[in-house]
Image: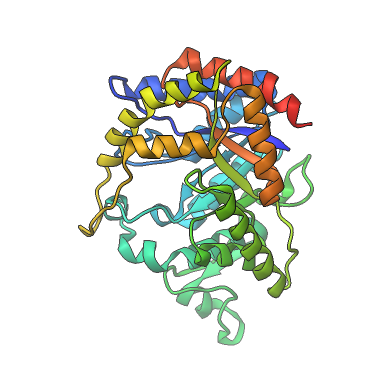
Length: 355
């Protein structure tokens, strides 16, 4: 079982953005020191829910600060960037980190980001499949072209494989090629897909890509999504097995009541401030969760309590779902020193109990 930290770079009420980012960087450093497997970095735009706007940029810093730790994005939002640009960045990190980088991607939400970055609502609602396929081609092929421009230069006018409607460019060389890592296995970086619906589960399964499942889901929901993934992958001729990742929250204390109290004091204020700041691109109504009720739900679903309880919860989730990788939010207190202590207890008191 592999346990890592999920890093939101959350800006809690009364904190500055630099403070949130410093806590995020320290999370990676302490995670390596205490023996955790990985860190997973979220990205958000224009909201204090998370103040990291580029997960791949922060991943580059963290890969440079560490020597063993795996670093993944959770996730890079595809509708806000060109798949080739993201593919180039992923290849660069894969090669220079000796294969320690994982690229997690998702389609994000219907937020104003789509207006600012020019993708528009169509990129969110209809473009993710094409974006994902173009990204995967960039990470696996020596040369890539797309759309009408690629078709125009293809032999005898045949359409280029995987050419789509959203992008049009002539065939170009993939530089650097991620398969040329000196100490790698000849493969590019691992790609995982954030899945929140049956449609996204099927999309990932048809391509044989592991899932990242959100912290709002309980074990029953995650088990159902893993089962759907397996059935879909098998029908598509893929292996029904993959190393999926389960996101959650972890807060440790000598008494479970104390761990829950820490989160109930800090997280509702952060959630309200962060979620209220989201603006939809098209004015659609928003149904946001009640911050206190959501915090209570997270405490019930995830390893919040004593180290013994936390280990039991993680083991139970793994048994019920088949998932063996975890990305756990450890900054829920909002305090740097408390976050560092939480990480150290996770690495020294919980992980050893998991075997």
